[in-house]
Length: 398
Ligand code: NIG
Ligand code: FE
Image (cartoon, rainbow, N blue to C red; front, side, top):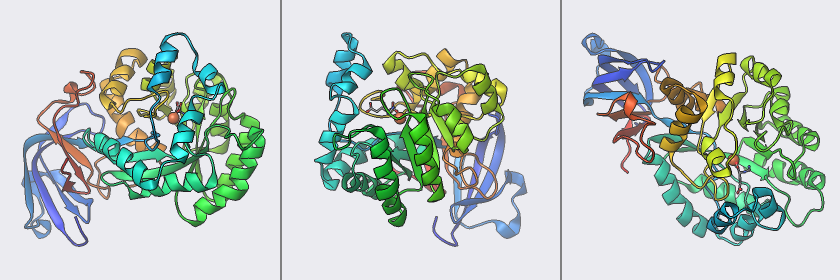
């Protein structure tokens, strides 16, 4: 809704913030895309009541989803590597023999913004269709100044959900550099300042893992990013105890993502930290990894988020229902915890919890409404119950 416009939504069943049930016959008023009043529909203040009314016909209303970790912009496919992995080659073997991230890099470098947009926009639409109002997309498949900027500019041109971009130049070592340290120095001195100046992103990510970036040199790079004003996030402890999860805590990162290999001490530290543990079980399924210790993290008091990690290598799926299903089936998360992880948890992971992630006064009116029940979600793989998505109070046509 544009500036000054007000709209009343009435006759809705509003999901409680702990997802334990709902309150019937509720209403809210949206102005400039934000919730300015919420309550029982019998108590709408006369002075506030706008002419524009929207009857939600007793449907269930809940916060829309926030997908906080994806690599949606890339060229080509890695379907051939999926076959190789199934026939016995490991992800690291493929990666160190020129495949993996570097094979996507070659195709992505030679693609134009137009070509990338044509490929990426339908993928973004695919998230929108599942009720995603806010989508994070990382760069990281170009690995040089010119082409990483091309990716971030492509991300800025995408339409539909609200999009948050993250610079993941430190995704793998490109062929122009001999060592990871040299490449990080290049990124820190030549690339980060340009991204900052062009306002292409305010988030920096790095892949800390054996055969990729080590936590020592990563620390200096991430500190540089923080000094320049970037928020930071880390791909951490996916394949090994790489130290990334601990570094994220030390630096006060917004999130640490994957976090499969954690010791008890680190789990307890997450319980006391603001750093969100972003769990990516679809990638774990494809990689035949262990699943992250979600139950222990939540019981320790940590905030967790869930996301698809959509990318052509380790998680070629955009399916939120699969992610939530795996969290329930394999990670002992309750249905309520899955909803929270995909809304308020994800908002914290992206540092947007002041304005998004739940339906509360002053926050954005980003929600879905449905005839289904809460228990219909994250139950049937590949099926998101029918729903309508509203972003800032406006129905999204899909
Ligand atoms: O999140 N781990 C690094 N990045 C991706 C994989 C990228 C790729 O294989 O293309 C991930 O799993
Ligand atoms: Fe990832």
